[in-house]
Structure formats: structure tokens, C-alpha cells
Image (cartoon, rainbow, N blue to C red; front, top):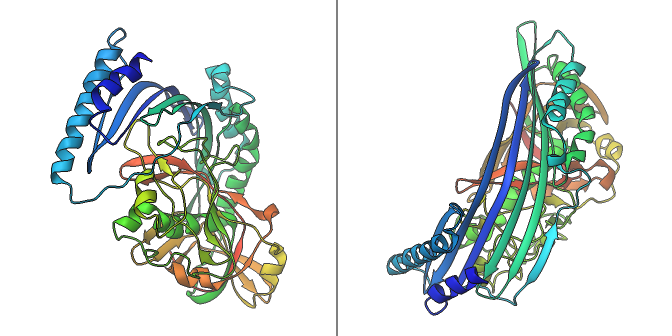
Length: 463
């Protein structure tokens, strides 16, 4: 209560809105490269931040919770700094800032964990990576890299509405990257498994290690692709990247406000075939899941596209209030890396499955490609154009999957792709796509669980 009293004394009569957030936790990282320890690292954090809205200016300041015994003094000074920054910001502001406000929330939540990472000895985590390494014994694989990391964090949030929220979060990531070489040909492959869960996450990765090794060797035989416009089937991994990068970022409310999105004037208009695209941070265990966002808003499933109609944008408190007449979405997608300023971000973003069998999606193509996995790419959300890179490419001829080809690029405009999705696979084919999404110098965990899709006509190019 002393913390709230100090903040209220400084801020309550001066600002329209304030929030106070603390985060404390520990991160561990281990990696093994070619059978040897590459890195063992541990870091701890204990910090807080204060953000205030004074008239039409935001102010922000953060600090460490140390040293002990001076916490209240530190909070008081940081609140004064945030207020000063907000007042200066207001002087130069050319915006009429609106802010969504609601009822006070008091809650305490935590990740459902079977095995806490902190209960597992360091030696066991290291041996896990060595076990992965020993499984791969093929002369063609010249480089093997395995990594493990875990995060246990506790976040506390308070604001001028009277909210008091405590969240305990656990995440675990395991990954591998391999390089194979033969006959002057070199290929790389990688795989990652990440969950909002405990050490039990690692039990699911052994099969991925075997698959990564098998696939990178298979890639050595791939031939060049003759590009052009073709029908394609994209697996869930590649579909996830397309939806996240080309559609999801364009649906973020701050991009709309700044005039940087191709979706700006299309709310409630048909932009695709009859598909549903959602952003859902409530799915237990997914890497991008959370209970409350970094503005104290409870997580909720939202439809970006529903039955082909652009239904909603993703919002913070500010973008929700500013775009209230253009989108019905409430806030709930403001996220921050650590104690940074919250930005509008995705969580778990994906196409909802439909009723197509994968074999049927492929069998109906006379001349096209089956694309698997993703190596990233580039996107211009203002124009809606993109170029993504598939890990694997297979020729489809008369409904049959043929030889593996070299990885290809997928190019085009997101509206053309959305309007050319003619089949969406069943849930059983859906693939996770965990990763760290960068924006504004911050990285936050995201995920998706996308089914494969068939796209009627898209430009294919050789890498």
C-alpha cells in the first residue's frame, strides 16, 4: 500500500492515467556446439516502470528495485521523472490522445507447470543437450548446435483504475540448427520448440531433432526451381509466417493510426475467401499466451478476419479509444519486453482449421508445389507486399508429390493471397510456429497453430 500511496500523492492530481509495473525473475541459457559446451549463462532482473498520461503527452521511466531499503525513495523519484517526461511530451504533442479505461481488476494467476525449470539441476539440462547431440551421427552433418533456455518471472501491475494484478510466468525453449555438406553442396536447417510451460516442454523435442537432421540431409539433393505463377500447398509453419508477418502486423492498431497499414480503410469489408483469422493469447501452453497484457487488460480471443470480413484490429488502450469507430475490438494486445514501453503486439495468430484432408489438397493440383517450413522473409505492411522463403519445396505433378527441390521464395500481395486461399486443412495437420517477434526494438514471444492451406495462384521464385 505504501507504493500506491507514494505514486498517488505525486500523480493522481496531475495525470489522466498512470500505471506501475514490476518484474522480477531469472533466465537461464545453455548451448552445445559440435559436442562441446558453447555457453552457460544466467541473468536475473528486478526492476519497475511507471508510465503516465498527462494531458496529451505520455511519460515513461524505469529503474531497478535495488538497493534494498531505498525502494520507496526510488519509486518516488521515478514517478517524478515519468511525470516530467509526460509534461515535456505534451508541450510538443500534436495529437489528441484518447485512452480506454475500465473497471479495477484484482487477480493473481500463474502458468500451469508440471516441472519447474528451477527444480532441475544444471547438469541435467546440459546432459539433455549432449543427448540430442549424440543422437545425430552422420558424416554429412558438419555442424550441430543445440540450445536450451528457461524463464521464470513474476510481474505485478497497478494502475490509476485501482487494478492490482500478479502474474507468474514460466517459458521453456529448446532448439537446434544443423549444417550438412556433400559434393560441394551445403544446406542448413533449424527447429525450435517453445511453450509457456515447464521443463516438461523438452520431452517433445527429441523427434524434432531427428526430423531436422533427416530434412537437412534430404535438402542436399534438391534441384533448382523454375519459377512462375503456380498453385501451392503451404504447410502450417509457412502459413503461420505469412499470416503473422503480412496480415497480423498490418492489423496492429498503432500501424493503422500512423497510416502505415494497407488495412486502414477496410474494416468490415471482405478481404479474403471464407476464412477465419484469430489472435488468441488464452490458449494454454502456447508460447505467445498470457493472462493479462502489459496494460492490465485480460487476455481475450479476437477475430481479425471472420468469414472473409476484416472484423477487428489489435489494440492497446490508446488505439482502441482512438479507433473506436473503426473497430469493435477492446484493448488487450499491449505488450512489452521486460519493463519497456508497451506496444501493440500479436500473441498467437493463426487461421482457424477447416475440413480439408492434406492429401485432397494436394491431389487436386495438376502442376504446382508443396512448400514446407519457413526461413523468414520481408514484408511491407503499407503496400501489403511480401517475400517469404520456404525451407523445403516439392514438385506436385498430377496430384502427386514428387522430388525435393531447392528452397524457394513466395512473393506477392497479401490481398491476392487471401483471396486465393481455396482450401484450409483440418486441425490435425496444424503446426506450431513459436518465435520472438521484433518491433520497436523489443522482442516478445509469439506463436500460432496454423493448418496447411492451398493457394490458387502465387508467384514462386528460386532462392
